View 1 (cartoon, helix red, strand yellow):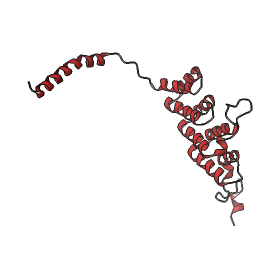
View 2 (view 1 turned 30 degrees about the horizontal axis):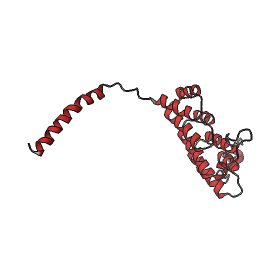
View 3 (view 1 turned 90 degrees about the vertical axis):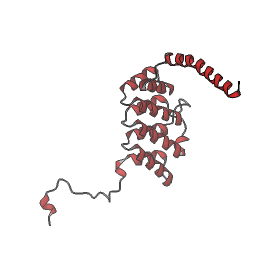
View 4 (view 1 turned 60 degrees about the vertical axis):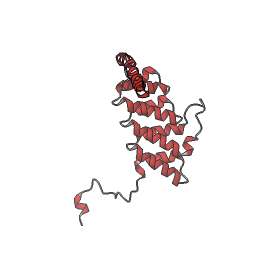
Length: 193
């Protein structure tokens, strides 16, 4: 026998021997894949929230994966605890935008990231971190809000991060020259020359 025929025989025997193993593997029961609610509960519970609260929040969420991703992002990239993150993420329409807002501000504004923790607990988030979370939650456009806070706290030397958060959130800080004051509740005859 030649070397070619030996290789051919070995290949045939190996193929025949692996067929039963392949059939057994196909028929073996597989565990049920986790659905989006399982993933949501697991991620939120991993952020330090009780499984019961995580289950309640995930069951109420329109898109559970976005809710859990929001909580996980805020909890892992900022000093904000999972419970506070869950409360904020649960209250907004776009949880991923909220998480990006909070994380971007924490990353770009060193004074917020370095703010001292509260006096009761060294591991608790600072008041400035919680104010950042709340301001991003209140903002209608969190992406634009985070850009405003970052630019304001970087470019305006006299503003503290807390003032930058308030300035960008407040609608009163728009220049009034752009929006002229039209007389209201006046008689139209008084306005005509």
